[in-house]
Amino acid sequence: MNSRFQAAIERTPTMHYKNYDIFVIAFPRPDGHWSTSGEVQKYGAEGLEIAQQFSGPFKASSETEAKLAVIRDAKLKIDAILADLN
Image (cartoon, rainbow, N blue to C red; front, side, top):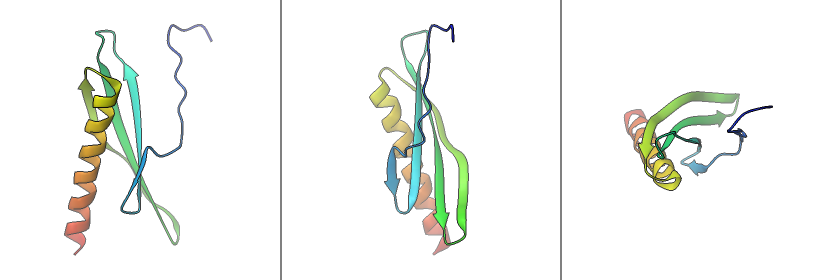
């Protein structure tokens, strides 16, 4: 593969939060910043219940900052979903 940038997509959750798996993907941008987005999955008794793009895209000056923004946003959205269920 002839490319300046090669990305490996990993299917290991970045974090588990309240029975949800949060996946984060980060890419360097040409302007020196990082762009991230996140996906959330949840498995129940009958298999995969939720799988959707959930957070982002976010832009930050470092990969860590960008990933943390996605994680914070995903946690807030999961908490909101759980609050609505009660």
